[in-house]
Image 1 (cartoon, rainbow, N blue to C red):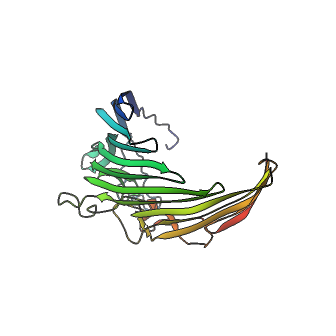
Image 2: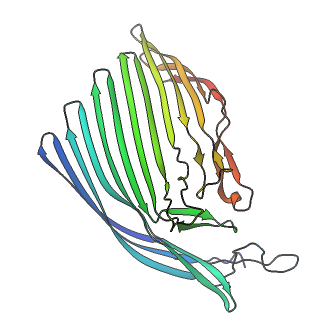
Image 3: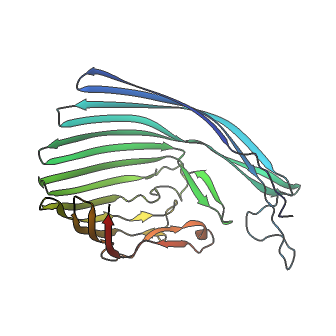
Length: 338
């Protein structure tokens, strides 16, 4: 009876304690250390009622569907973790800071439970996935000099048991470990103020990241880039804010963004990806009465680029991937009163 309620007392209990302290041996140097202690219990259960086909009364032909014959399979496990962090801040001068940081992150283990058919009836199928751990290392500079300010950061991340979600032929998403992975990146941004009424800005990021190319990693994962992670991403533009009299001003902010190719799934599928995209956006208008009123025109995706936000998803498991288009050119006028 599908209307019969099934109560599954599953869930997670998590206890966490965090301590952090900073030592300042000189006015130019700050040393910070912290530790998080995590204790958790994770419970999982599986129950399924798979009706037979209406016409032939045969078993369902959808792969992976197993009727548990009224049984509810359960499993549980407990985990602990110690997650440290260290940070160093050094002031080279009043206008230039340098920093370095080391920290450990974690994604909890997966207590994954399903069912399998056997000659003696359905049985629970427990598929544990180990915790995903990442060590993060980063160094950088932040500074300003007159009309110029900017930042530069270099980071490296090393993952063990990198967890991915794979949608099987039955349309069910399951978590599994893709093996080790790493991320190396460089980010930089700069801002110029040649006059009080103009600001010019730009930033760029480069990332060489993905699942490692090692013999012990499954061939379909080996060397795959992370989902939604471009190799290069950049943006630039300027803002004009020009006073008119004592209580009004003109403003305008045109900008351009660029993103290199991204994949929507791991393992990567070139047919389910998005090539490089460059977008142009602009907003301009006038504000008056000490910013109480504003009239502005705007345009997003001014060149009407045709690109995707996402693809694949559950439909991809059945050979009919779902494609989600991004916003086309959109323009309009805004009138604001405060």
